[in-house]
Image 1 (cartoon, rainbow, N blue to C red):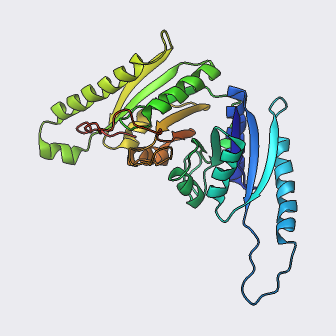
Image 2 (cartoon, helix red, strand yellow):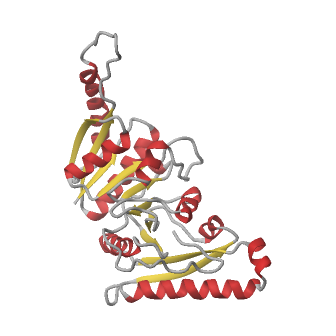
Image 3 (cartoon, helix red, strand yellow):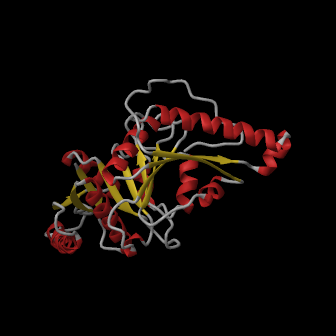
Length: 305
């Protein structure tokens, strides 16, 4: 198994690298650390200076050597430099070439420690990658946790949920932990009061969420260790904040039903979760073919990743 880390010589790049190390140690994978550089450009009427890519490559090699030195012994590590107009597309192309099963990147831009911020590169990956994507929250580089502690799967009704469940099971087995299934319910007090019967709406939403959790548990391997919980709040962010998280935890979500086959597309619920999560998130692409093309009805008062 190969994990590709999209690396930058920045604090967020260190976050992504350390998450890649944690995941590689957990599942026994090889690390491919990749830097994507812009190609040489010559403007009309200008004489090419020459050596542009060579100079950049030499500097990238220095950065990559420092990154590889951070990787503990026992993890096979290879470094790569590639040139592409788009950092995100460069990572996707390298992941396909290397047959990597996961792209790992750090949060980009400014943000609170322990929170994700979606920069332009991450945003492009979240809406175009054909490979599962792991996002490291800002500040993960300061963690001393070496392996994944617990895997949480956010259950929804999207077409990628089956693959997300399979991924979560494999990760839980590798980590030697139980799998936590969660269903998040957003209960907008203003909207619900207009419809009347706050309690009945909440009950219906919880009933629907329980059905989804039970359906997920029904397809798990026999005697697989699993827990499940339903959490509600005025918003998805409130519901996420009610969950208990520990250093070393991670969450898995499937892509939105809007995603093209074999591509990522972060749904509105998952995007809201990302704003407040303090743990890494792995987003799984939509599968090739939906076994059921009909879209399930959204739960009243609820929401899905």
